[in-house]
Image 1: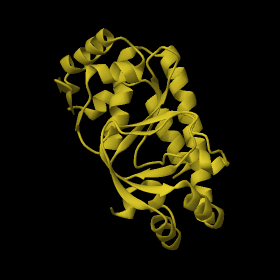
Image 2: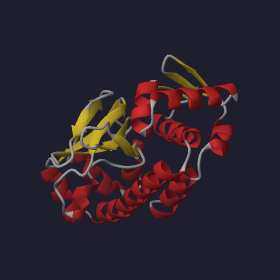
Image 3: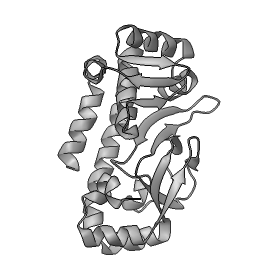
Amino acid sequence: MAPAENHLLARLQPRDRACVIAAGEPVQLAQGDLLGEAGEPTRHVYFPADCFVSLVTAGTGRPGLEVGLIGREGMLGAQLVLGVSAIPLQAQVQGAGSALRIAAAPFRRELSRNAGLQQSLSRYVYVLMAQLATATACTRFHQVGPRLARWLLMTQDRAHSDNFHLTHELLAHMLGVRRVGITAAAGALQRRGLIRYHRGDITVLDRAGLESTACSCYADDRRVYRMTVG
């Protein structure tokens, strides 16, 4: 795995980056892999390279709702930066690929002696907080169509491809709506020529059109990341 594939690692000074990479190991993650359940102790942190992971909050007796998405722009396990071991949200791989995995103990040691890593990840914690707040407001106030457009853009950013696989069931689960709502919203995007969708295979045909359709939350998230992390 090329270390520069993860944006947080790429922004570190070469010596700091080398120390972080030496503390971990490259792993391949498969779609559906469960990397942690809420309340469990953190055993590993992950720096995605070309995979992406959903952060899901689960209600009692109800399907979970996605409140965050982490790809190569970030990391999984940021709670350790705050000195907290307990996992706050369920983490499930939605896009298969590679990542750098570091066990909790060596990560803590590296964090304590690597000032560059501390600064970078402290800023990223702020980004995560903003993303979670935005997701909450988005779910409450925005309609399914713009929310779906936002989620497809977020997925495309992290998949680094115009093509990816997402079933109606998964999209409904992630957005917290009924499957029929996703079917209608995806059909509308397809009729407008923004996407092609068949049996879960999605192709983004018009990125600019999708951005204009998405709710403002997508642009807000990107702006916070640029201003905070760089």
